Length: 254
Image (cartoon, rainbow, N blue to C red; front, side, top):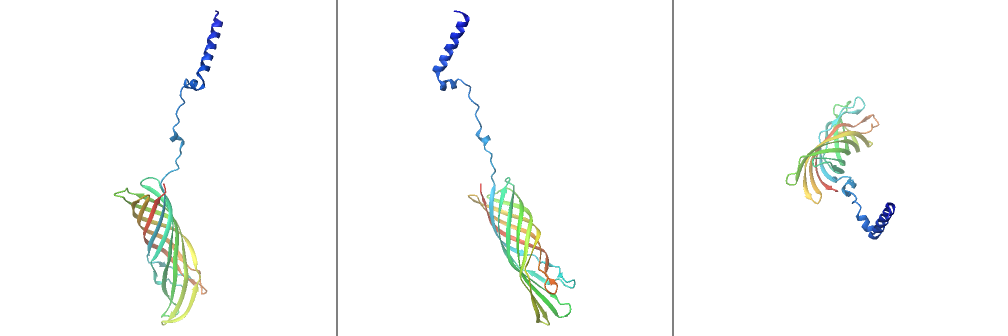
């Protein structure tokens, strides 16, 4: 048998053998495909998102009245801003076990602000101003957590944002020799100011993703003022600051 005839016979036998083995068995003769790591295909958006809610007691420091309107207008004497309560909510993200941030919105309900100013043309005359003050702030806050000990995590933080301060229910009464000498009603007005805050507190782990947040916040809210009244005078209160003691809850979403 010639060489060509022998090669032809060998090829024919090989083809018939593969056909007899079948596709499934033939595949077994191929090298295995490389395994894919499924973990590499999953892109994790991230964990650490949380929601928060707070209620608080607001203790304002003594405000500073600048006098507003007429050049002859004098600042209020003995100006007082009473205490108030606040409520707030926010959403945050924990980047690591020691660093997190959140955005919060808080509303401080009406607190009475009052004071008197002398009437320049009367030695024994004065004007008494009174209004309700309320404030809403939106802050971006950053915190440093100092580690968890027996389920308790102390922290410090700082925030910056904007505050909308509003004076409502504004009344003005004049007295001469202790007797009423006239009154006026000033229109409500809202001012928007840069606000900033410093915080410290403790979080207590309650389990199931919940934490109790006991915190202190010193906040600077800016100023508040009325519109100028008919005679050309008004109220302008500067450097409104408060010590806030808050109780809140945090819930970890992930």
